[in-house]
Length: 341
Picture 1: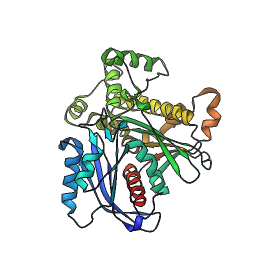
Picture 2: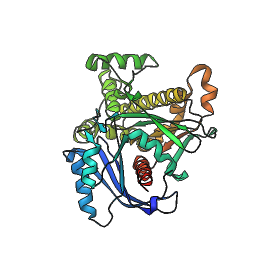
Picture 3: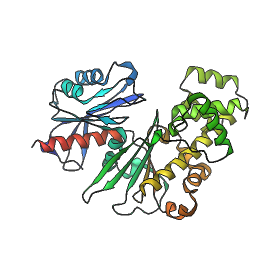
Picture 4: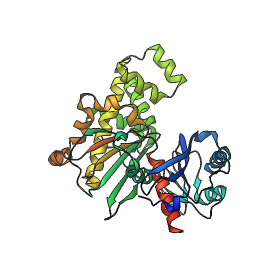
């Protein structure tokens, strides 16, 4: 983890397509981060991340000038910039540093920040879906569904975990049964290439629902149509499913959970995640009852043929703390502050 960097204040950000968290942190001892100020913003309300940061720092005044800064953002980082497919605007590290009054700022993929932030979380920040056995120094895999789908891996270097970015959310969606094959064919007509993110994300849940409705799986009641028109469709579908208000929503969420479990199992195999598989992002905590219900998620996770027994030994946990990526960015900012001492 980061050092206390002389107890200096650091600036961190978790930039998202829907919501962005910004915060100022200080260390309490060598391993504990203390939040001095954290604010959330709707990304679409601003013309850029630098404008949002300027608003945050204006709100906080000049009482705590940061000594270093780091930010996570969805998408590949190239030359200090991110232009993610789910962001309303590009993110530029140089522009953020200028607003903060610093010579430079760190910029990383948001799942890299999330992976780093795992070390700042407490046991109460997780819900265990599969206890398994956490191998000391074993690799970790993260699969985070939200506005989009992020994945990352983290490997032990002898002193701490080092995260490796991934854009596996944009790899091909691989259907597992006849229904999912029909779903893929339906989405191919609309998009051509169908990435995993097309079905495993907030918009993906809505796409599954729309296909079930098209196939006349069940009738859409008037109240549900009105709520879908006036609210966030994925949130309406998930909440209606969990509350048992709609058979159509319940089936859509069940398919979503099956796909999530299969994707997490694929990530576990890809990174051989004996150190644990973690579900991040905004969706998993909100659909926790569905992830736990009936073993749907874990059956899909384990349905990998000859390696099912190995997967059964891997811990699977839901990240409940929505500041994990922000904390990871703060730790990275602490590293930058330490380098200047």
